Amino acid sequence: MVPVRVARPGAVPAGRPVTVPCVEFSEVIRRRRMVRNYDPDRPIPAEVRDRLLAAGLRAPSAGFSQGWGFLVLEDAHDRDRFWAVTADAGEPDAWLAGLRRAPLLVVCFSHKDAYLDRYAEADKGWTDRDEAHWPVPYWDIDTGFAALLMLLDAVDQQLGACFFGVPPDRIGALRGAFGVPDPFTPIGVVSVGYPAPDRRSPSLRRGHRPVDQVVHHGRWRAPSGG
Ligand SMILES: Cc1cc2nc3c(=O)[nH]c(=O)nc-3n(C[C@H](O)[C@H](O)[C@H](O)COP(=O)(O)O)c2cc1C
Image (cartoon, rainbow, N blue to C red; front, top):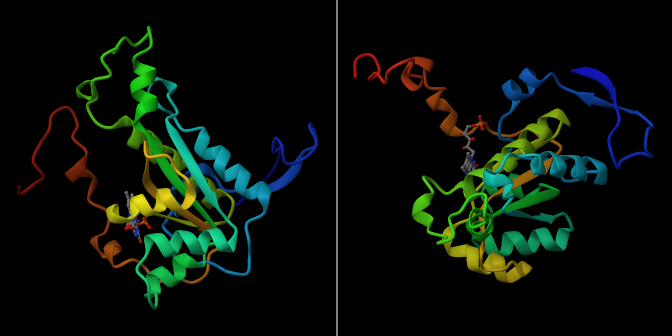
């Protein structure tokens, strides 16, 4: 950790630097992992929350469309409502019990229409708004980029965070519970809190795939032996 003096816009009167802990960028990437259990008695200070959200909003987006929306849930009543509409009733398993302790949930929504509208503008020219122009759904990708920046900022602020999905059959109830308009699709949720001990995900046993299996220099080659 490298303590540096930085000014956080909005957090302090203009021009007054404050000291915040910062982690080297390469360390942020290396240390990032999904944290699925949090200290339930340690809420996220407003300025920490705002910095995390601001980091997300710096994400790149196609045509600078920024076709996203973020539902921020901190109030215990709101968080309970989120879990009530997205998770099964009954005793939560260890995974859910840990996630439910997160004092902050950021539900990340993508907004396809914002992209179709943006690319119908004169400088882009796709006035037919035909989705066939799009190689992949950039609205989901850009919202995912924003979520990733929040995950990285969480590491930088000594927080724990996890990205997880909303079951497809719960999306309607989620929209209904929080007044989210239909054109907004939840691509996932970033849960945030001060980390508590958690169990390693069994998925991690897979290990990172070797570089030579996934990186192809000059020409696509089958992995050795493949
Ligand atoms: C698109 C996406 C969806 C994910 N969904 C879940 C989820 O529903 N539940 C969960 O516990 N983790 C979820 N994860 C976290 C992955 O399991 C995790 O990133 C992976 O196992 C690697 O672990 P690490 O992020 O700690 O390095 C998701 C990650 C991504 C990128």
